Length: 68
Image 1 (cartoon, helix red, strand yellow):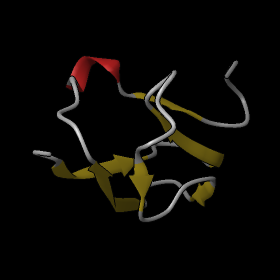
Image 2 (tube, rainbow, N blue to C red):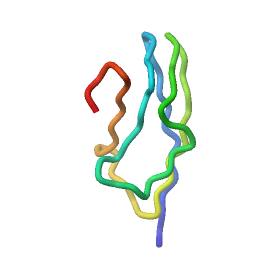
Image 3 (spheres, rainbow, N blue to C red):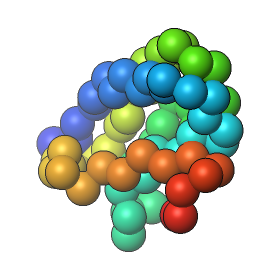
Image 4 (cartoon, rainbow, N blue to C red):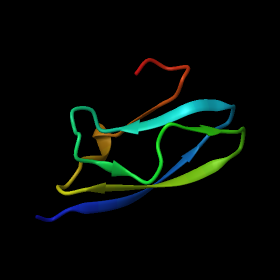
């Protein structure tokens, strides 16, 4: 199987609680970190791994203040 590995940079202008990356409907995607907090101006690089190719437009990023 041809898999994929991405580096996704997440940043926040304001405090973001419980930031979550997700590919809805996919339970085979692994994240180096998930459900983390970001302070204003903070950036974090998350490694995303999948056994099959992913479509970038399917990636969702949410936090405590958004609907999941």
